[in-house]
Image 1: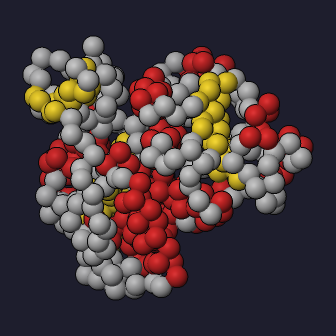
Image 2 (image 1 turned 135 degrees about the vertical axis):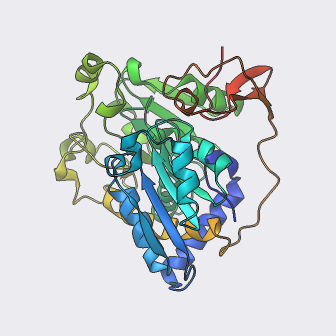
Length: 356
């Protein structure tokens, strides 16, 4: 049994194997795969697609589900720590699926839990299950994942789906990226450094129209009000982008697909919904078989051929430095303040942000 916390922990071949396992579950359902196993879904943030697709996936492969979809209905309202919540719930379940508002919360939970943890999104950090269903959809529609040009549009600073998918696509050959956003919410420097280290070309832009003809995957995101500390900044950037039929049709590749992790607000006009480019609802549907595979892997019912561990970084305890990321779990829970040493620089073990 193993936790699934970050897309960084998987090689290209492991990712492809997970996608193949998910496709097999779609074509050949296994209704008793996790029979008599209990899946706990702990959603400390609102969710529709992720929570319900994990629940649907659990039922489809024979599991039983317990959990909550709002912290207001739990002892967290009374001041219980995440640590204590995990230690209690592990006694009631065989695997924990958790979404949390703090960056690094999933990794923290993994380190203290005796049952596997599946990260269903931690703050603005990562969202590996969304990334896997994104890749599944890309492979299904475009027949491959190599040699793609992807344009990410919208909230790229706080968009955990963008961070995870960029990381995953960078493992495949022939990638090119366009990051299209206002300067205030552009892609973080940590992501750019990863691309620079791999010599993957990318451009930072403020508009997408001039590059549509080049794009294979147009990945739209909403501007996330809940991530902004400054309400005025949100008001300035909230309506930065909108795509519609008259903008897209005839101005893009015939094969281009439009993805969106959903929910959308006003960035995609509904007049695009019935076009061949719009696959975001099918993308959401693909979450069921991907999450069936993830649960099966976490519980040891599905095996993938693991390669050499990617992360060879040195991890040390640092009782002095606190993570400068105000939303990091280290600022809300008692942790070991672990840091990762990489290229003679220190990074937070939990959220990955650089420690000055």
